[in-house]
Structure formats: structure tokens, C-alpha cells
Length: 246
Picture 1 (cartoon, rainbow, N blue to C red):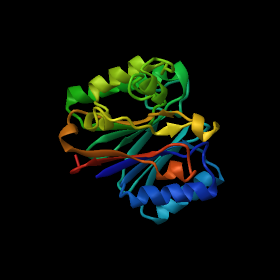
Picture 2: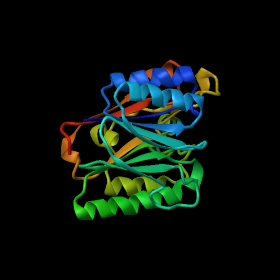
Picture 3: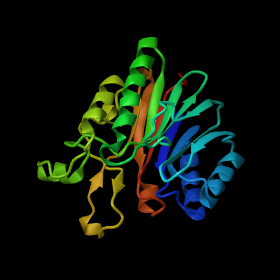
């Protein structure tokens, strides 16, 4: 089973979203999370294309921080499962028959702290019940020492993630899949596209956190830079492979 995530960049446009759909389908993802989704012409174009290719089941929240989750498999969806008043479109819970997925697009800065607190407490509940789960998408957060290129290359804390303690706390409850498989590798999923290429610095913002019950099934977690390099978005896509359905 493969689960993918990619940021559309401000909702994308009717051309870019079709290219991103093609890339994620070619990666073999049975479930896909699209962050920065908007229910406009581009969003409707994307959803129609995905449905034509067998992704019959979907749910979305839509504003500047919307999320779309689509799948070849049926699920029950809840938008804003934590009932949060701030940024209510940041998380969708998709309850599949055998696992629960949290589709994520976090706001920037410290504004994401309520969402992280919700995910941390929810992950603890899933663990206590022995339930498999995954949270995947654009978290706008990471490890300051490993996931910010300028910090890595300088050996100094020049830039930071304002909510980084919550990233580490969630990682302690549900391990972050890519880092679990690449403990000493540096890779970045986002580069500021509004700066000259020579001055662009990378940040790893896109993650998948998985429950301990799924760890034995974790076969791979990889970034696909093609959509970012091609200019379809400013993020690399993320694809997580579980070697069998939970």
C-alpha cells in the first residue's frame, strides 16, 4: 500500500494540478493527500481527473489552507476532527476499515500548535488501543538541526521552526517515517521559489508520522522532487510504502 502527499501551491492551476495528479498516480499511490487545496476551477479539475482514474472516494476542506484526501478505497471523513476554532480546515480524519489517516496542512509559525497538540493526544489514544494510524502532509515544521539547510551547512542555528518541540513530541508517539529510514541523510522538500536559485535554501516540511503498529510494515519513504523541479509546485511529493495493508 502506498500513501502519497503533495502541496498544490496556492491551489495550483488547471494545468499544474493535472501534472501533479499524473505524478502521484504513476507513483502507485492508492491514497493521496493534497495540501493547499481550493474548491475552485483548479480544484474541480483535479478532483474530476482523479475520479476518472479510479479515486472514487474523497473529502476536502477548502480555504487558503484546505486539504483534499482521495482514495481508491472507501473511508468515513471528518473535517476538523479536533473541533479547533483556529484554522479548522487544517486536518481531515479519514477512517478506513483497517487504519486511520490524518490528512494535514499546518499553518506557519506558532499558529500550528493547537493542531499539533490535537495530533499528539490523538496518537496517544490510538496507541493505547493498539490502532494503526498515519498523519501525512505539509506540517510546516521539522527538526531545526537536520531539516533546515542553512543550519546544516553552517553548523549554527540561523533559522528555526517556532513549533519544533511539538514536532519532536509527535515523533516520540508516532515515529516520523522518512527519518526513521534515513537517520543520517539530509534532504529538503521545499525551497523558496521567490528567491534567486543561488540563494534558495531547503527546508524539509512534508512528513508522515506512523503508529508503532505500522512500523514493521514500513518498507520505504521517499521524496519525489520531479514536481518541484518542473515548477508544478514548490514542494517535493512524499510517498510512503507499507509492505502490506494494515
